[in-house]
Structures are given as C-alpha cells and as structure tokens.
Amino acid sequence: METTHLRRGSRPARAGALATAATAVAGLALTGVGASGIAFDIVGGIMAAIAAVTGESGVVDLGFDWPMAAARAAALAVGTTLLVTAVRRRRRARGACARCGRSEGPGDAQAEDRDDARRTSPAGGGRETWQARGSWQRLSVRAGYLTVLLAAGYGALKVQWGLGGTVGLADPRAFGDVRLWTPGLGDTGVLALIGMALGLGFARTWRPPLRMPRWMPLTAAFVGSVMLVPVGVLGTGLRVAVALGLANPSLEGLSPWVFDVIYPWFLAWGLAMGTAAVGYHHRTRGVCRACGRGRPAFVRHARGEGAVAREGAATTTL
Image 1 (cartoon, rainbow, N blue to C red):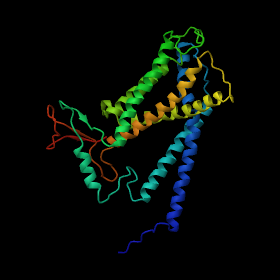
Image 2: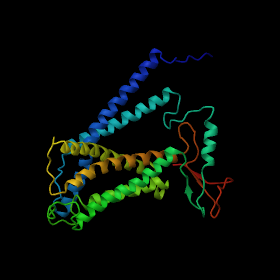
Image 3: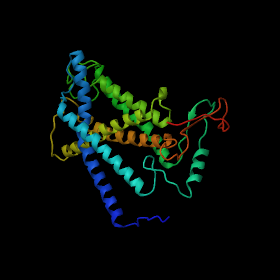
Image 4: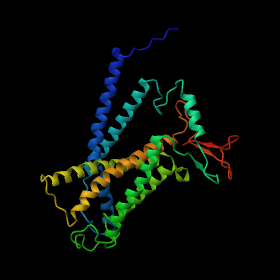
C-alpha cells in the first residue's frame, strides 16, 4: 500500500503553517489583552472581599469592575487555548506527539536511558526525587530559589507596613491607621507566601502534597506569572517615562524608590516563577498518556539505600 507524504513547501503544508501562525498570533493578542489588567482584577477582588467582611477600606482603591474583569478573564482563557492549539498543531506537523511534544528518533532511546541514569537518591533514601541536570534544568532550579527570595522581599515590605512600619513611606501617615488585615497588606503577604511555596517546590522538585494533581501548582504559577509580568513591564515603562519627564504620577505618600524597585521586582519575579514552573513541568511530566513515551517522573528509592532499587521499584507518574 502506497503512502503519500506531503513534501515540505507543498500547498497544504503552507496552508497548515499559516493557520498555525494565525492561531498563535490571535492567541498572543488575546492573552495580552487579558493579562493587561488581570493582576488588578484579582487583587482588587480580594481586597473588595476582605473589605466586605472587615468593613475596612484598603490602602489603595483599585476598584473592581465585574464586566471588565470577566472580559479580561475570558480573553486570557481563550488566548491561552489558542496558544495551546497552535503548539499542538506545530507538534503534529513535525511528527511529534501533540500532547507531550516527544518524537521518536534514532537517539531517543539512548537519551531516555541517560535521563534514567541521572536519577539519584539523596542520602538516607526513602524519598522520591529527581535531580536536575543540564544547563536548562539548572537554570530552572535557580529560578525557583530566586522566586522564593523575590516573593519573600515583597511580602516582607507589605507585612511591615501592616504592622505599622514606615520603610518606603515618604509620609509615615500615608496609610493612616492600618492593620495587618487591612485590604492590600496582609492579603498580598499571603500571596507572597504562596509564591515562596511554589518557588521552593519547583526548585526542590517535590511531589505535590497530598497527591495533588501537578496541574494545580503549575496553574498557580501560570496565574502568578500572568499577574506579575504585565504589571512589571507597564510599571517599569512608566518609571522610565517619569525619569524622562514624560509623566508625573501621584506617589500617594510612598518614597519614589519603592516604585523604582518594585516594578522591575515584579517583572523579575514573574519571569523567574515562569522559568521554574517550565523546568518543573519537564522534570515531572512522566510517561505520556497519549503516546506512551517517556519514563516515570519519580522512582521510589529503597529506604536506607543510596542506589535506585531497580528490582520491584515502585514507580509513579503525575
């Protein structure tokens, strides 16, 4: 039986490539529109909920517009779906698995054997781990630890304001009589704690606690990055405009250095969290359910042994 293969550059192939590119461009546009204000929607919604419970007003009035928040969330969801669709179309076009991106080739089996050989057990055993190897994986692990540091720094600033501290305030009475539970202070400190936990978990390649599906921390990291990166980019651009004398925004009692530091801080935090999450995804994706390629994400080691218990080792995938 003869099989007809599409030659590279043929009309159907070009049409498929153009459709994939158009899908990707539309996805990027909608994702950008949705991400542009999603951070203010999320934080504003949290602050509004806390204010409704405690009866206190927030340190800043972000406001909360339900129709616009819903529109941005819908744009982000549709844009992300289009981007995933474009990636899967591209994978299918090059003969790879649409779900995981793996493809069969002459060196694939040897590469997976090398990956398996790199799994090592920490001293004492009894835990499930996979040490990151390669420059990309080392970078993603360092990005996880950087995420912890950046989240801790931001959380410390907001908590000290909630406790009455004046670091970063040009006017010590700028926030009035605030408390830790004042909307915009303690709640953002909790978000920083979540960011620290995610960064540390990605860096250490922990299994999600309580058998939590791995998509949960990855989704949290995606939302966090989508919140942080646009605000960081827009805020940094605004500070550049201020430095050039093109803008003169109200500082609301804060020291100018807070704005000069915090927006690049957000950008670095979002990029670090995204990098750490991508590395974690690749280290823990395990065996693909669609094509069967890959190896178990975690290999349980015998307690008290330093080598992998090859015979009868319990393997798990996430």
